[in-house]
Image: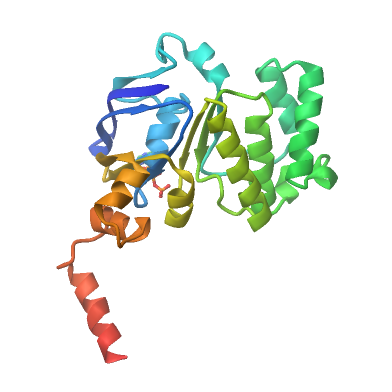
Length: 255
Ligand SMILES: Nc1ncnc2c1ncn2[C@@H]1O[C@H](COP(=O)(O)OP(=O)(O)OP(=O)(O)O)[C@@H](O)[C@H]1O
């Protein structure tokens, strides 16, 4: 279980995140939604200690992050929002680095790496520098690295971006399996069909503020004739009387 209490992040005058309080249960897939710049990555980066929040607290499985940074990090596998990391390393060297940082048992690591590499069809790419990978291959290499230590808590920032349909399908199955084992899966996405299909619970951020937190089925039940995309746009989208929107509608009618 993850708990954010009164979490805020300011960059100078810019409020990236404002007073976020939220509990993420284990055993479920939890999704963060929100427009570009809404604060999703800021929340996830605070959770994995990539950035320090301006105020507020985070705990993971009742361990306070600020007082137990290393112990909490060890529980977490993190896929950042950009896969353009460690490009000078081969995929295999990158996985070595993570396995040693997490002190993964070598036998377990070999077996898990083999499974993940075969699942994501990366057998022929282990000795290739990640600089030579396509965007999707880099994303696969980062996902394999994050899951290699078999962490309890998965924090995945837009993990499907750039993945081919097979890899995206397989990752969704892995996420569901991990949650069904009672563990924690948190991800962010802009693909609302994926969120509707995958998430048990959602948080929607808008301009750094939490505007919805609850179960997806409950949200869908509030507007039975609508899908998550149209409900999300009602909650987080531009107002109906927005000028740009009216111009677009007007342009549509002239076509
Ligand atoms: N290093 C930084 N310096 C200044 N402002 C930042 C920095 N990082 C993020 N921000 C600002 O914080 C806000 C939230 O950014 P964040 O990356 O959390 O958004 P996001 O919801 O993940 O967006 P996206 O969907 O585009 O990835 C944005 O206004 C962004 O400009």
